[in-house]
Length: 304
Ligand code: R2B
Ligand code: URA
View (tube, rainbow, N blue to C red):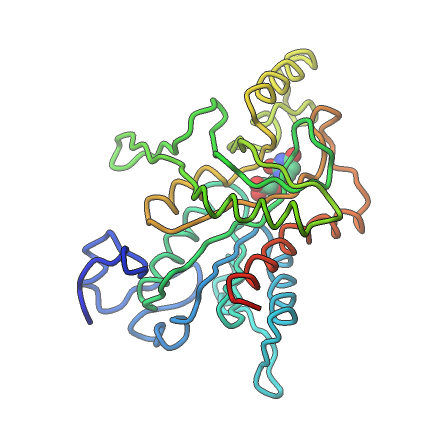
């Protein structure tokens, strides 16, 4: 195999020289192994990696992709969870699309992305796009809206991910692909008639409760006035939503030179409350919205 580091030619680049020297690479958390399985044969046609928090949502997305792309499975077979044996993440492959769960928060997403990027490298995948299809809390926009992240920031409005590596802080810029975000926004505006699609800054926090200024966690050492002042302040600075993975998603995709986008649906307007109390059926419908937009995008890219 040609050992050149790829990127201009569209192959997923691997920036770790140690991996190339290993005979086998156990992708432990997704239950795959290079050298044991022929990952190139299994995955080389992948063009879209779509990820979202829960196994169930990503299983539903896999079925949705199969139906929309009209992908026929061999008679008698069903879509199967490739990573079932890991008991960590669920992953499905449907033609050129991978649908995979990433769990909650940056650490869980980060582990998955390391292994998915290595999978793309081992499989010699070319021109892949990564999408996070998630949920979030909206700030000053109606519940059920779509938000395409323009810029991911941390809880202090900083647009980089800070890691501790060998005991030292390392900063990785959290940059998302502008053209990809604009393309998704255009599809949202023109084809998602059931809701509005916004563009904005996404605040990525390390906690759902105090980290997002909620008043309904197990602890709360600030007042309602403090909370509202904070949300209004960040809203005035262009923050449209809050969730828990976008910063690492953006930083890791950028570091790997992979084009990535974050599409989230707002489950509530945080200026109006903290509890997520919308009926289950409505919530289910809302959670399909990022998936619907993703399918429209994928079909466009595949000229369907
Ligand atoms: C959105 O929803 C989850 C918390 O409920 C978290 O994973 C996120 O980013
Ligand atoms: N996910 C979050 O992280 N926050 C919300 O408010 C809703 C979903």
